[in-house]
Image (cartoon, rainbow, N blue to C red):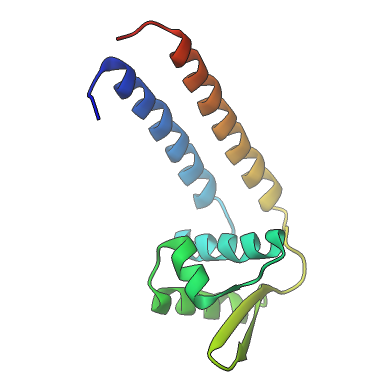
Length: 129
């Protein structure tokens, strides 16, 4: 990958987006990794395909043991239900998917992505190189 002014500008836009999303994650109900695991459980819920521990570990890039530890925290808080059956452990949301904090979170992420999209589109039309 070239280190051109255009590439540096793209990286700046993407880093700004990632930092904005990280800030939104930090304002969620649980500390960082726990919120990330809960988001992965929500992904399974929203897509209609509840995830097992291995899928959650893959989606979050966290070790299975870390995912299990965070799921126990969420299970004690009655946010998730863990179903153990044979060799597969499936995790589902307990109750509603959304809380008072999720709507502002998703809105902030949406705004961050749209801003990055807009800025990248503008960058594509400029002659920087």
